[in-house]
Image 1 (tube, one colour):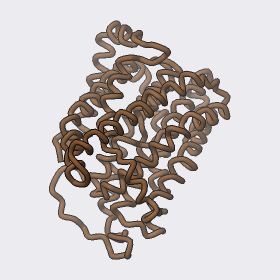
Image 2 (cartoon, rainbow, N blue to C red; image 1 turned 45 degrees about the vertical axis):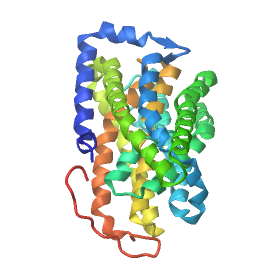
Image 3 (cartoon, one colour; image 1 turned 60 degrees about the horizontal axis):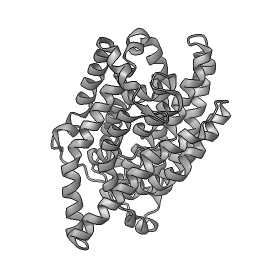
Length: 361
């Protein structure tokens, strides 16, 4: 496990602090960067998100989808939770808290923005970081790859209509042009580039294991760029919202409440379903964590494109980053502690308790 994986929460926490500090010390600089946009898309944010997403997309093997019918349980849970439950519970929690529970604590004019940010997070299941969560729970890497591949295909076609539907239900105007542009920029193009790169690497290495070895070596070489992209994006996003975070800590706490309820609730639904259906732990844990985690890169990018860098929607997606890492690490630890309650394989044998080698668990 790399130093980054082992101390992920520490690096992200340091970048959050750095972003907030820099945003308040050099507000003019961040305002200048915020103005670097085209068609409501911030160019620097776009570059950093591509740097984050592209290496993970190279690892996506669409050929693995041909095998999904052999072990369908984890995929069924993933699809149902990610696309038929999670977006709607997130929207419902947003309406409940920002139009009713917290109605006296926030400006009514901002409620719609906060709800929109929650919807964007809820409609974007994890694509990149799930590989780290899967690794930390000793998940089946190949099965996780199949789950991610299927999610990416669904996301291409379902994200924009789903977000439009939920935004429409909450009476927020849907700028379809910007929404579709964001899906193209942050899902379709990186996915196509990753697939083309993977095909080239496999062809160069030959069929089977040699080709996969080329892919593994390439992703290992470019992973530092993904890490730098993640850390730089966190600094940038918290720099944009640094003044709000310091000036309105109560607002940050209010936004965190539905995010926390959603995260732990969705994990409970998926993990309990996997346990009841006797799904092996190396599939069940990543399956539940995929639904809990968010493709925050996409959510942040779309929020910025739709509503602007300094919008309430963008702030919610940034708070999503703040909440997600400690929540996911706590769930990883819980999944590892409950491993013995799941079968180790499809035949129902109990899962062994692995020897810990240090680091996050």
